[in-house]
Length: 357
Ligand SMILES: O=c1[nH]cnc2c1ncn2[C@H]1C[C@H](O)[C@@H](CO)O1
Ligand SMILES: [Zn+2]
Image 1 (tube, helix red, strand yellow):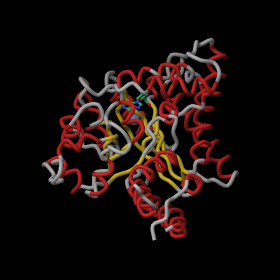
Image 2: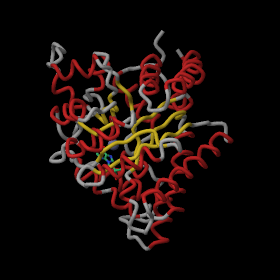
Image 3: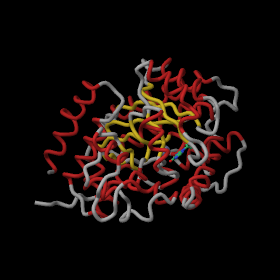
Image 4: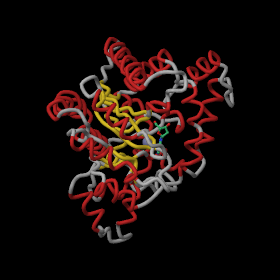
């Protein structure tokens, strides 16, 4: 029997999230308070209006303009207490939304203008996640958070950030990523960092195939050795419309079970997909790529993990079978050790969905 999950039920069901930016998920009220403390001018000072401003400014049809909105969040994340607060609230917000495992990423190099060092940035964020996770567990909504450190693809600090990632691998950093404008900044600019990470047996994902197409995905996988693709949505350019025949790259991605970190609302805002109903996630799921559902930037998209799933339920008529499949796909693709992934799948995810299916 097909049961349509309701929004409330989706919030209660355990979810796993692999692609969420710390600086894209602040509470509007927190931005207002932190901005007042440092005298940073915002486009609005009423939290509700500010939240709406982020969504409409990010609704630009272009990744470059979407990224401009981050100047306001990054501006208020330049001290250890601010970073710690933002990370703590992030953990609490995700946990309250029923996320049981999350990998949250941010770019340490963007948080140095207040005089912090790179290690101080990482330690403040890790402390905030630890605090938030502790409070969430006490509130009856346990969450495990792994951090990914991002290097900005237009900058030249990727090797330093890769080394920072491995330095903190036993303290909660589980992976590395590159992000920022894609067109004109191919991942191969950072080959030395990726080769270093491979020699260190470390994990990394690469934002690829969002604002730029197949060459970016091909480089991320075949030159750089990415474990996962951040977005990767443009892999559909290598799938024949109508027949679903796969080109060589799409065939490789599916055969190798390369996880796609799809972010439906974000993709609609940046123009990578025309609408949720037309989002390639429908086709990619039908063809059984390893699809995962993600938020990208909760603030800029006015969204949550539950809302992304509810939008998909509405657009594609999906039910608990599909939501469990996305959740297990994400958990299988996480960067924490295999035995820890299995524990979450077998002890948290499967028992909860068994009651819903
Ligand atoms: O979806 C995205 N594509 C490329 N870059 C992104 C995306 N979302 C956020 N970013 C950038 C802006 C942030 O400041 C940075 C680190 O989180 O990553
Ligand atoms: Zn992203």
